[in-house]
Length: 257
Ligand code: ZN
Image (cartoon, rainbow, N blue to C red):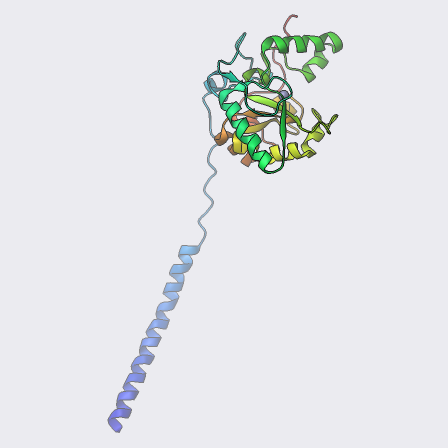
């Protein structure tokens, strides 16, 4: 019996020692764990991406720019204009990649119960010229420059953009008006157009940068990757800001009519 008691006593003492050892290791382990979970300092932000300026004057590139400080080559007509199979009120020809993306986008919107409609897409230099000089005749150069692009400077001549209107005709007066942003089409486009490679080309409060007042109806195709990157920056982030491209007002005198 004494042996049993002795044995049990030794066992209890050993267990006690073992537990004590375990305990003394805990702070070390605790420290180690703390060291691992201590947040590392924020890495310095990556510098903004820089882009080869040649991309923005290359008519083969989807990033070709037409704004008040970037004129398209004289007489430029895109070689791959096609008529997409979508609801359209006017000339809806677009460059092939934009046309195919528009077809996909219209189908996706319809699944959400939104029926998009394009008023016009491609506009040739001659058409733009007639439009611009018509405005100049009516209102003078200064006003004409605020409501119409000069020929050769229009995003519509790239064949990569489109003006959207409400499809059911109930929104007369809202089409080509900032209130278009509140329509079903305006809302859907703002939330989803980037998923199909389109961006809002003239966002709110960016006139000094883009050269144009807010146009929630005018969307421009640049491909899904860049469109998404811009949209993720801000729903009203502009092409000019993202790519570091000059915009704003005309730097040249108006052309002679
Ligand atoms: Zn437009």
